[in-house]
Image 1 (cartoon, rainbow, N blue to C red):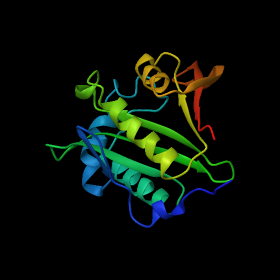
Image 2 (cartoon, rainbow, N blue to C red):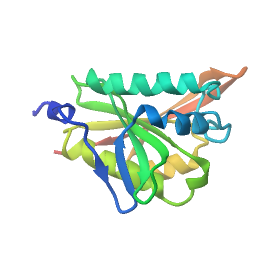
Image 3 (cartoon, rainbow, N blue to C red):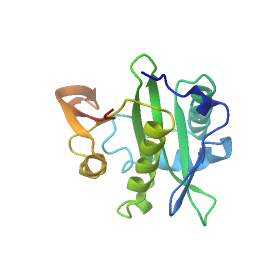
Length: 186
């Protein structure tokens, strides 16, 4: 069985789709990340507080870049091909080398919801993960109420593996979490 292709960490893997350029997250992206993460709508299905300061966004950019440098994750900024500002982020938040498995996650600015751009980005990242990075499986943890994310995952062939009831305690209430996975067939 082949190991993961660690050469993807020698130079950041930029990806291109019909409408998007997926590139490394840069410190100058912190302002857009702050705008996105301080939006209650973007965080609606994610158990996390709205980002309170630009400095926290800068810290997140640093953490994402460090994860890539230490080969623990790969975070992309999604940019429309004809505009410089990012519209979202997506990537492998954690990598399990022993099992050739990674967890995928992402977010997109509200203005770009419903345009199939998230599908385009996730499809490119999944393709890269399976065909270049040589992942055996990709996992996504999602709120069962997030119909948009679930539709993307199912469209790409992800299958629901688990549904955890009252898994997350956030803002004085419990919520469920579903786990979807895509397994590469030999």
